[in-house]
Image (cartoon, rainbow, N blue to C red; front, side, top):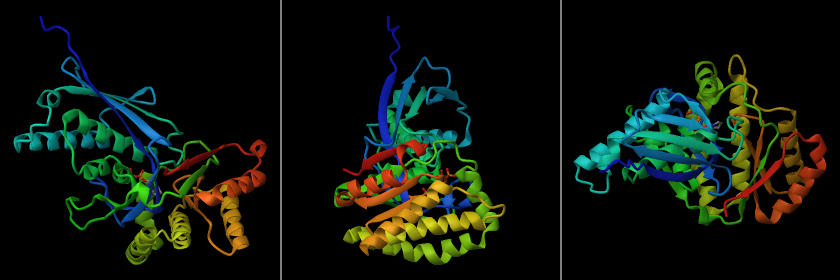
Length: 345
Ligand code: 2P0
């Protein structure tokens, strides 16, 4: 009589994170182990985010995934890594006597449905939110909790940082098996309530060179990247963590801008070179420096990832004025994008 097969259904969201000390380059491609530590700010849950639903049902014949409404190949190696690792962890927990693990679900296939509320692959950290959300949602389906950033990392490096809110470091780790390459919260989102993040969208097109391929070429060809990873980032991480602890915006801003600039310098030092910034990006950089110079202090900081869109860090009291300046310099008519206003609180 038990003919009705009910799926277990779990929906979660994960926000994007924006790095202020950038990750660029792997020492192990398969395990996704970075050549340097990095630090980011995770945005608020109701801003730029991925929403993922995982259904698990004994009538499902195979694992399947839909991204933004389109079915994608479930056999993608990184997807398979995340599925395998989370199931392995669930089995281990169950064998260790954890009664919260759902044994029924563990033997069933899953259907995964994931949507972003922002342009995919435009340098807005879509893979970070996507894999963080996937791993977290699967963990909920199986009844697994605890440290999961090491699994999210195997989906996409930057995804490990979206497993935590607020200010998050990804410690590069030393081990060859990657067990110590995990994310750690430096401060919660409540720590710096007046910090704001603005995303100035210069282009919502897909980037010409993806991060994974780009950083691989950089590791192979850029001596500047090696110098950065070995001699610049270790000290910068310490300084950035201290600036965050002290809520020292001027230091936070300068380190953020310097790190973005050095990341793009390593892209230019890559052979053949990679260009992520465009004319609009360079105008935003000039504008921020002009604005800060006008006040004689760093009130606003820019940072750019693998795309031309500017992410601006500032404090609440400067948002209105800075946005007014942006709208004056980039009138909506001449601007092929729009400005999202987003914040931590
Ligand atoms: C970051 N980016 O720290 C840096 C800054 C882009 C520029 O993390 O190959 O998509 O999946 O590990 O995580 C983009 O790299 O690359 C990135 P994979 P991912 O946010």
